[in-house]
Length: 167
Image (spheres, rainbow, N blue to C red):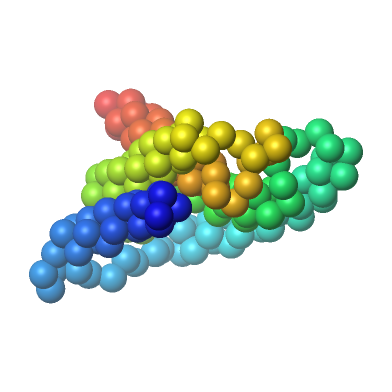
């Protein structure tokens, strides 16, 4: 039951926020210019390199019993790390939200989902502890929430830099 709460609550909040933020018939497709399309290609490249190197590194560290996690947690972490590298590269290059994207709405949504994941994951660890002292798939929400918050921080840093350069 507690596992359902940990996954179900963030998912329900995400769906509710998507319905609220979507708007009624006002959505226009996100348009990318040529520069943003090229940046997306480079972001995919860096994300793939991160995945390959992260996968090999995680496998070696798990074999040496250095990482306090099981293999499934490590592989999902590498996958989420790939997505985070892609998004942060796109944000840093100013291509993540397209030409007319609503960055405030999406950043707020990412922040809320990230906080919900961190809170539910931390509560789960506080209640159940870590089996055998290792992170498992039941603890993935802490890592996912942390990566979401890293994305939020990257967006705010970019926007502060953009505003400073505009003044």
